[in-house]
Image (cartoon, rainbow, N blue to C red; front, side, top):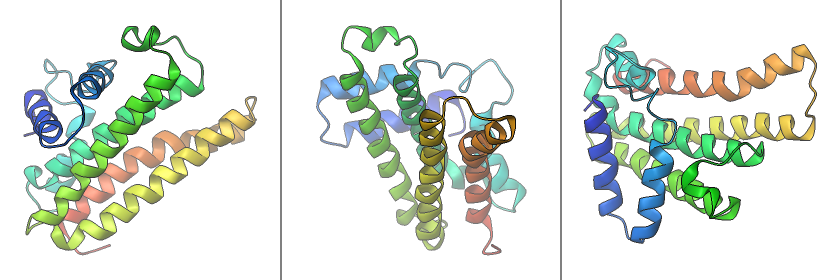
Length: 191
């Protein structure tokens, strides 16, 4: 499923199988696609969305073992990206400009819950079921670290250079390390 189309089909199937209302699903589609072209660049031989599958393979597994994890990771990223835009009071994306930040926060919540639903799929596969609980805990712990970094940035908007690097590590660094570590965990019991 590592292709852009495979990821989109997976997410669509996830949303169709949920009881989310059509207008929220449409808004989540728009939020997911806004700014994701770089991450899901179909013209590129590889993108950072391939990271989970590549790390799983490097640890001795098959890239497709990381499909659920990769989709969860991308949906969490989309939700966090949207919330960051709202919190930083950046220019709104066209789809939520007229709706306002409250509606955009609702969509971010929907993306977070969609990501959790994708992550829960790990429990259903024999290859990933034993690793599902520690991976889910790692995901949620890392999301709290990322949120801590965002909170600190908002609470102290003019950090020192040292603090800036700490925030970058807590936000982006934690997120990319999470994908690598979790995907490798699918292929090995070696923590």
